[in-house]
Length: 255
Length: 247
Image (cartoon, rainbow over all chains, first blue to last red):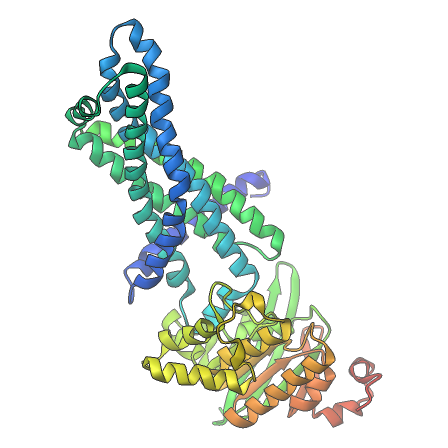
């Protein structure tokens, strides 16, 4: 192994570690009594507290997208197609990916830093020696909370995005709310909605998993907490993009 | 095996990478006995405690806690043994997202079938025994170092462990608070009749709490005895711990 560069070896060690961490998650998820109260608390911590950021982002995505498209389609007299374009783009791709990336930043760093500091201050070890399973209490709850909250946040952001799009159309193209949303709902089908929601569950899983893995395996020292949070964001963002690529390929084959 | 043994360590070796920390550790701790471990910083005293509780695994050797060999246990079996052990960390290791009350309730709600009233009573008793009932609704960040250690001790003792492991309980504290902690350890020993291993550099704490002292050097225990016996030792290394003491 000595002929390989250190970063390549680290990559494979991390991948192997993440694989084992995932396996442990599924074993602990189905084992013993679920930590319902802590999962709800985590949904609040990582989901509810992301609402302001997600709301502003979602609204602005729709608003700016419509603003950018109007001048181009206006040349072809196709402004009436904007609600259809917007709904497909936002629901299928832009909403899930951008909100997924925002969640990767906010949740990934939050989980990584929190678990990292718990590790450094021996709180995880204290839990372990008290015969309490820290993995189930800290990791399983956070990953589950991320899997629940990311899809909800994406649906919420998609809705705000369409409202933003409507406002833009209302001001710049004088389109009524009834016409805008009837166009939106006549375009959107179950095949647009379902894959988008399913992939965001995986985004949530990936974000929670990577954040927890980095924090839980943080080395000693306060510096490593920052490194854990930072690397959690980078890895979670990359994972969201990769999962999106895989999800799009699969949904294209199925639908 | 002797019936009244709480902990029995046989030929334990532990290394980190190429650094051999424990070469050949053999130790017996009897029920109700209070043992103090002395040794230089970084010589593996805390590693022994972590091996006893299964946070680290030795490279070889056996660690029996009430007859169960820790390195050979399954996860579930290890959890059962851990219920008998209390571990006081150097920092206190309080859960900083919980209040003092929640910190103390946490193990009780998960490990026992006690109802709310019983849990409240136990929390109250535990905090009163360390003299900190007034801090019940405080967050750990609002507590001083000494208070954190006392709360940590209360949280550890609330589950009535049979064995206590203290990892430098008085390090970083002023002499008055160190003495308070040492007296608290002694009080807990008399009250709960626990067996304990105390890793410390604080000789006053050692004198107060130890039934027997062992000295660790170069990965092996080089001598053992009572405080008074070791105070008379001719070994320069052992003598160095007792130099300048006024008691």
